[in-house]
Image 1 (cartoon, rainbow, N blue to C red):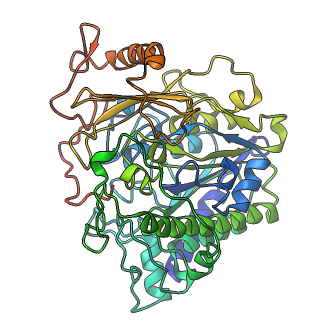
Image 2 (tube, rainbow, N blue to C red):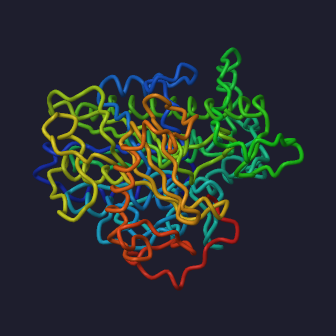
Length: 512
């Protein structure tokens, strides 16, 4: 650790030692571990026999695995707004990729700070302004090269400049939205994944758990592209025959074979061939295994410090990655590769018996209420999310039937949609075209067949269409008129509930 980073940690930790709370022994530590762009099926405990994630699998074995966790607005900034606020997209205001507001009524770090926690964030936040804290006592940032403020340099990049003077942190030559892959060209201890894990372990090792309970957010910038694992992790997949992409019978418009050497490196759609996909997927999985190793280090640091038993360790991703499924890449789509995310909760030892697996539909908005609940703080009545511990303990018998999903136009005009799912069936309404899609996720988990015109699904289609009408009705006649869904002529990126963004300008090249 360089002097600058060391100083940041020292100052932040000093702030944490200044106060002592009577309930410090009662409140559990809360450790939120996030990844960026990790699919729900890209972890061993979810039934994936190809990806190597022993530490996450063990965490799931010791806690609760939420099988049907979704990202309601599946790109980084709106997903993180939902996590931050505990609200749905319509109510926190972001309906697609834009900028997280500088201030919200409900903010996770601030609310936990108010509940007596020392709050610290490490890694990718993807907020604007980039140094805004939303209640964190301190932060150490890795924004993956994103520089929305011309004067911003992340803590990781400053550290890198001292550790490897004259070297290029982007030496792999793969940009943030590219779907090609390559091996990290520098020492693996210079990789941002290692830095994030190392900073987290350092903070835990220096923390005084008797001072006050710790809320620590550890946010990895991978496995989001670049798919750039160190060679050691890629070697683990030498003999792993990763599967071909899922290709539905509905996506023929994208089926034309493209030459990867000639196609745009960040093209959102395209048939680049199965071997290209498998190669990218190996590197993607290897990045996940790299992260998994760092999670193992963090868990061990908590055990060494005597904090593990009295800690809620919560693992989730902001959204998924299509990885060539249906000739789609990255996210912002209504399909499982994009919207379905992994979610694991290792509860404090004193909570008692919990379910090993939960099938109910949960969402990023449920994370903040879960933290407030376990911290003994009040969950606001108007917060859209709900605490997950009662669900895991079987005491919440009135859970939601469906979760809502949506994304404003991105990549193509017709990629503007709203959806409902319970993890078993999914209904999609496309705002610009009026087209509907229906997928039976039990019989067809890879969404190979759109059953919207299948007669045996007529009743379920009508039920979900009626539910969508009810869901969108609060938005007014621009969305629902005379009891019918309205085909829209223009997109809406921010809802009327958002703060004013008139003074903000989106990046010319958005890092979606």
